[in-house]
Amino acid sequence: MKGFFTKLFKWIFKAVIFFIALSVFSVIVFRWVPVPFTPLMIIRNMEQWGKGEKAPFEHDWVSMKKISPNLGKAVIVSEDQKFMEHSGFDFEAIEKAFEKNKKRKRIKGGSTISQQTAKNVFLWPQRSYVRKGFEVYFTFLIEVFWSKERILEVYLNSIEMGNGIYGAEAAAQHWFRKPAAKLSAYEAASIAAILPNPRKYRATRSSGYIENRKNWIMRQMNYFGPLNFD
Image 1 (cartoon, one colour):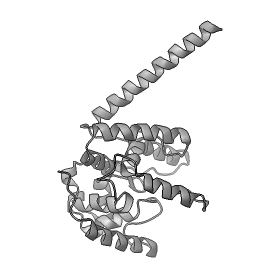
Image 2: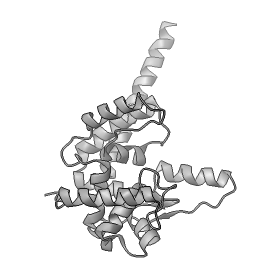
Image 3: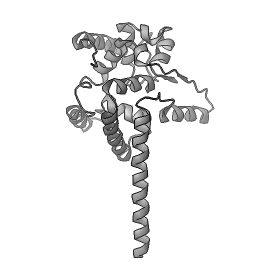
């Protein structure tokens, strides 16, 4: 029996070392290499194929230089206003979300853009304590190995911005028939406004709720000032 536990411990130890080495290697590679697809993209397509539905898929990676600063600013003010200051986690936002969740049935997270990027690129979307633990780990890694500009670049190229629409370029073409580089402040706010549920809401011909969010984001963008990574 002692020999069995010794072998089990060695196997677990090797598995942990292998996972750490592979995860660090992946994070370092994606510091420079575009992320071709994410687990969410695969899961969404499999879900729709399984239901016999069409599985739309639009994703076109572009560099940060080809994404309007308006969009970066819009998602920061709407999703994570302390993005440029924190080291991956906004503990004040997490505490507020925890207190609100105790009073409501619908769970609302306090995830930063860094956390969302880690989840989108390396993990699966379903909520669980296991996934949250891995999310903390990968968030730490990308904050160590990536710059804030790179985190935002990967975020803007990977997140869902409509049904089967992933990333800034695909979203700009889908909603406004123009490249991401030419998005106006209002158009950027329109895309950012639907991020809480991009398969339900529309960036154009929007509901009253989304129009109100657009106006709020526009005001926040005016207060925020220029987006500067230097």
